[in-house]
Image (cartoon, rainbow, N blue to C red; front, side):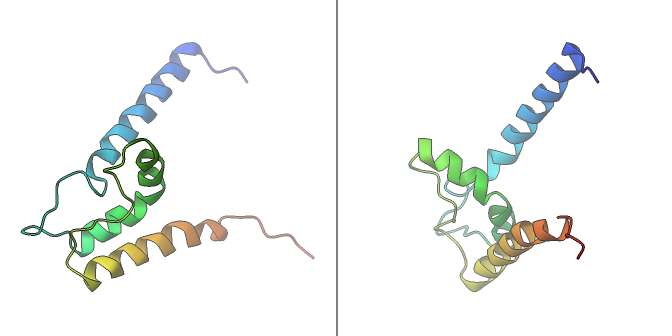
Length: 99
């Protein structure tokens, strides 16, 4: 099955645009401060974005996988939920070998 160049280009541009939009709210981007700490829902978002934040953090020392300015356990709880659900659910989609 051949994929046309036009289709491949449009899919590539869509993926690049989505990654750029999604990385607009990664930890360490300056959005959160002592006055406006990250809460539960930011914890969930940052947990989902952790792999991308890790890769970007290699090139930009200001970017971290965890927001320093957070409101404590609610942020930690949301972050943990996202990490477990995001990476733990991968095993649900793997084909199990039949005995």
